[in-house]
Amino acid sequence: MIATTPRSLTMVLLLAAAPAAAAGIDVVTQDLAVDMSTSVLRVEIDAVVEVEGYDSFPIYGLIAPALELRVNGAPATLRADDDYGALVQWLEAPDAGEGPWSVHVVLEGTPSCRSQLNPALDACTFTSDERVLLPGEPGAAWYLMNLSGTDPFTGSVTLRTDPELHAAAGQGAPLVDEEPGDGSRVRRFAIDTPTETLGAWARRGTAFEVDVASGKRVVVAAPSEAAAEPLQRTALTMARVLPRYEALFGALPFDEVHVLPVSGRFPFGGMGLLGNVLLGDFITWPDFDYLIVQGAAHELAHSWWGGLASSGEYVGGGFLQEAFAEYSAWRALGETAAENGEDGAAVRLAGVRMNAVWYLTQTDPAAELAILDEELYDQQDVYVLVTYHKGSVVLRALEEKVGQEVFSAALAGMIARGPSGLSVDVLVEEVAAAGGGDITGDVDQWLRQPGHPVLRAGVSEGALSLEVEGDYQLHVPVRAHFADGTVQESSLEASSGDNALALGARPVLVEVDPHWTMPRVVTPTVPGDVSLDGRVDAVDLMEVALRAGGRVPDERRRDGAYDPLYDVTADGAIDEEDLAAVREP
Image 1 (cartoon, one colour):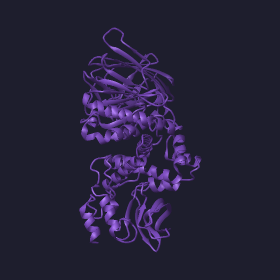
Image 2 (cartoon, rainbow, N blue to C red):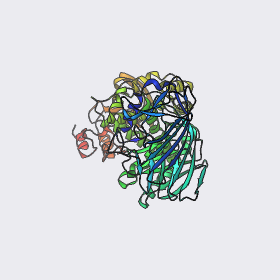
Image 3 (tube, rainbow, N blue to C red):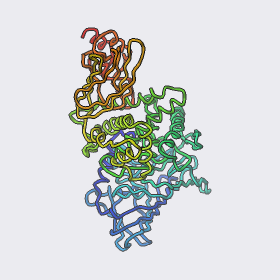
Image 4 (cartoon, rainbow, N blue to C red):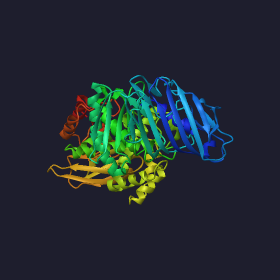
């Protein structure tokens, strides 16, 4: 999810605070009939719910009035929650006994699309050209959601719309697509793979398909001519990365995925459901061209991280889904770029560096929290920087340490754990099972303490001296360039304090962690010695000049090729002032 507001975090907190009485509830199936063909929304829900030991359970408040409510054929009631009011309602059926309950709910009315959590945003869109029901939120749910925790269900979604609107819901292509003769169009979508998050989408526009090498297809509906080109480019990218994700994590159990633009006050730049990627209209605008392809790759990754598998724990839940989606996106973008004849390593490096630099330069050290700190969920800005940016680079660090093959096997093992199966302990277990050893120490240093290592480097007496500030055990790649043109690739297992790596001849340039395999800052032992060879000379001038124009990205997901090592004056830009500082140390 490309988060732009605190709405998602508020939803998580409210869910976590829901009454514990829901512990004996399991929503098994839901068949939804959603009539979007008029300005009045009608939703019919037929669900099977296993109930043990309770005569009621909490759900998010509904998006429209409940016209009918029955459990096992008998009338039931809804009661507002004592603490949250209409945001959470209790479905009560005191005479129903223990499950399974057969629940039938009919909602009907003009939906209020104002978000209950943030009035500046929308919980749905209902115009003549567009009908979008977003995943339920408190006070705006259109299907049953169990608030006790992860609770996936199967079933179906049947959409009735204006016949000219394109539509998507559920998983894959519609099983039924017909016009019954009453001026509407009916499409039925399956929910065969267990999920707990749904959206329903219908919009006027031009649809097109992009074939995927595996036989699948990506379907896009462009609402305007201006949006067609960026959306088609996005679909092409998704068609390239989809086989990479399937090779890494397992195949999606359906043949069609969708790119779905959403207008209005959509609360996110993007949202990834299982097989459906929702994108805010605004990211098709020229000013956001840098974001749309990257964002769509991230959101598609949520079909696995959050879809086929999801977090079973509250603390760390964001890391286990958002950081893994971001890591997966840049890995796949790099690999597909290489297949297309581009410099795939450079493409991936750009994404990893962007995440690292954005985290390093935008985070207030005094306010930073650890990735697994529960208080992180109360602070949206810090949450995004630490979870998306730092978290994804931490995964790159783990991959570098245990090796890509081992890490890939561990990731596949995590996805196989399924809904609610992801946890930090599972990450440790799967790495060990894949032959990567015990990474408990790495988890502790990267996830349970805030901050990042600072590496002070320089060459002295034929060896690279590397001082590590902070409590870390690091695998540090090192690349040394020598006067005869040879290059030495090596690595250093470094711990807090002083460390050394023998180099033999004196190098003219040393690169410490050149591929940004971890969130870190590299500083020279000798001020101005950006080449890290132990002296300030013409090589330092050339290194700064080669990076002139690099500056701290002013937008999330922009790279900028910035590296604080070459920003000698530490003013956020690599420019003439840095050259002057090297010439006159």
